[in-house]
Length: 181
Image (tube, helix red, strand yellow):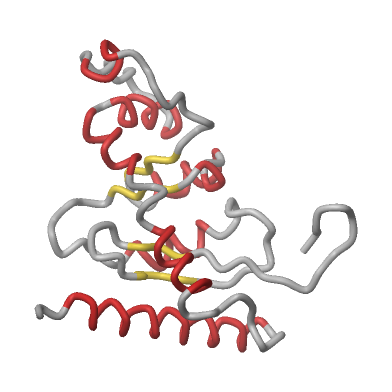
């Protein structure tokens, strides 16, 4: 992968799909891409067959790095309602914008145009607010507490196996934490 300051480094990007609420990793992959835009298509294919057991539908919330036009169209073709930030959002908007009525949805919109009104609804704002606090504990605890900073393997299949072991260790940690005392 290209690195800052020029040059390349043997590295991988390990995106993870994390379930909000329980913080369980529901899908993970390892790709040789420096940003998150290409990996959402294989991740989308993995998630397409998995229904939410709580019946929350097929809404997929993703970060700004995932919000390319191709990813939005791919999610829409798979029957998922993507909620991907289209850029940096203003942190402290006016109270009228926050509590006011949602903008009307356009007639026959493209998937990208249909996403903007969904993001402006109270449900869309609530789901979008979960973008950062949902995957951040998984990554942070994997790095800081579990000490997983880099893979010891080099080939893609072996790196995927190592990342699978890290996510398995994360699940065991979560199960222990969720056991009632």
